[in-house]
Amino acid sequence: MPPKPIPFPGFTPLSDRIYLRNATNTNPPPLSHPTTIIIFGWGDGMPKHVSKYADGFADLYPSTRILVAISKTLQASNQPLPERVSAMMPIIDTVFPTPTGDGGNSPKERVLMHAMSNTGGIFIAAAMVAYQERHGKDKTLPHKLLVCDSTPGGLVFSAQVGRWSRAMAVGTAKMFPWPFIVTQALWWVFLWGNYLLERVRGSEPSGVWANRIMNEEGVTSRDSWRLYLYSKEDEIIGYEDLEENVAGVKRLGYRGVETELFEGSPHVGHMRLHSEQYWSRIKACWDAAIAAE
Image 1 (tube, helix red, strand yellow):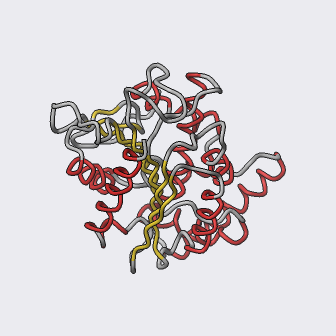
Image 2 (image 1 turned 180 degrees about the vertical axis):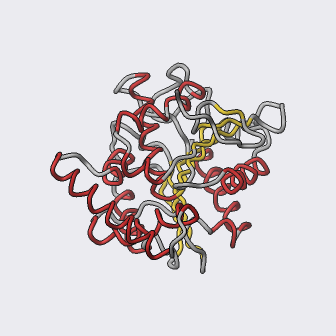
Image 3 (image 1 turned 90 degrees about the vertical axis):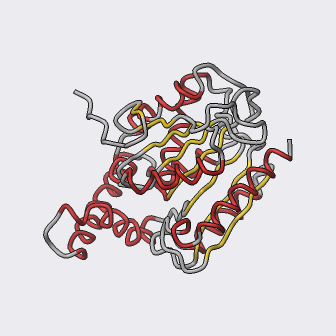
């Protein structure tokens, strides 16, 4: 039997990982607002924490429906690609039951997507592939703005395994009675084992795959905008790695690629420490993306 959805107050489960919250205001959203916001949570993010981001978006856009995808870090790192894609299909069937436009210029849906940490990025990429599986390889998932919060990081495994093992330990430490460092060490060993197994199989690591998919012209429209939110104090995502990635994205010809640097905030902690800066920057970038059309 499929896993049961976890309790998520205020949201209707579409699967054990995808949740829907309809708009608080029943009036149609203004043309300057998104019609749908899709939040891809960080690895092992709990509903009570992820829902704070849904609340923030609802304050900005009260007539907009919000979908949330919750995933485990282990699913991001070790779940087979077909299963990753299949898990995101309820999003496609809810927001895009039919193809609603090419190149991010849907006349019906104005979509804002929000990726949190590398797990969120991996499952946004999975949603992009799911859209093509449902509607054709010549289609790109229509969206106006993609917000990348604390993602992506570096893609060289040996240089990043310490950060990734820490991220997995943070999400699972409460499950074990021993010290945090032991949990991190176990995840470090697991990640190395999984990496070596992938090398033997010739498969592509999920983080590398997601970074490639999210920037592939046949998968994501160059008419969309990107906003990268980050800090130099992030203990999981190195800011130099993120800035290097952004520089590469800018060369690809997207309509808009912007960044926002936060002072002193930890991994996916920018909104908590700098709420006004966080939400005003997202709104300004959304407004710019709509005005550019």
